[in-house]
Length: 306
Image (cartoon, rainbow, N blue to C red; front, side, top):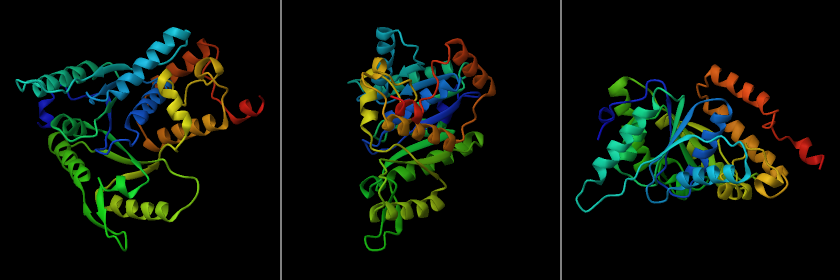
């Protein structure tokens, strides 16, 4: 199934795909934080969940919607689509999934600035198609050679890259398909998640191996999210590090960990270099003024004042 199969390839919406065949890398957390960050910037955002088994992004958004109603909080919520990719005994599941994905893309293209697609930790035709549509591809990667293995293999003595692995090879083919169809280029960003503040030999070797592979595969590196408990606390209520954190919203007072998490998300959005629409920025500024600056950023001095 090639990119030509999607009749309504977005002309206006910038497509962000979050992908990695390795589970537990933080794809859904990254998807949600990127989507909410864009919404808070005044952008019109849609999200698509292609993981029909886990449905983590779908559940995250449902939790956010429910908590907003329960507490009367003004929480930004994207237009969301969940694509059921489960097969059926008659073999019609794939065709139905492609049709639903095509309809979602066609519905999104003219009314949204961005679409964020969360992909499953498996290799199938729909996942490959989503990758071939990406303007920006974000691959969250835990800082471990176990996770690095989906990208490349390394020499056990020198840790030099000696071969490209299955996921990186799939991305290379998806980017080639994109160039053949519309001449578009995919900006691939590897997101190093769960980085420790303390330097280590593993951290240094990972950095060297990733830098070597980036020159071969033409991707950029960015620091992602640290191993913080706050990210796990956010999910049941559908919150993100960019939301106003109070005892009402999260059930706990904000901490310096919340400040650090917020800065991580802001730094990531800046590193992605996404084409933010200036009209969206003005919408965000007007909305903040209308609600009485309710979304004023949480800063360190706010916490120290408590």
